[in-house]
Length: 87
Image (tube, rainbow, N blue to C red):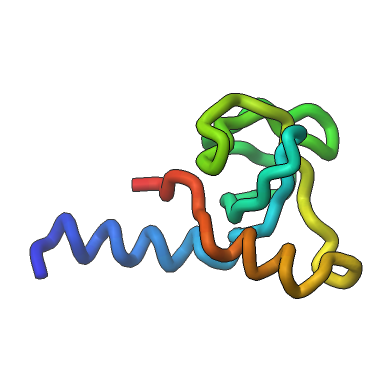
């Protein structure tokens, strides 16, 4: 393992705790990094964010899924696709 690979691996682990299932305005489900009060790859719009949807390959507003009220199928679908990781 190279230094760069090890460093990226450690950074990925740091951001993994901020992974959240989301739904875009077109209804696509995916997982993204959601840091409260901050945004690394999206424009914050109150409780929503404007960012790239990796499922539909378009820009859209996204909202967090409530894990308590979301169905198991929705959570599984969101977990199957993750947007770009922070390098």
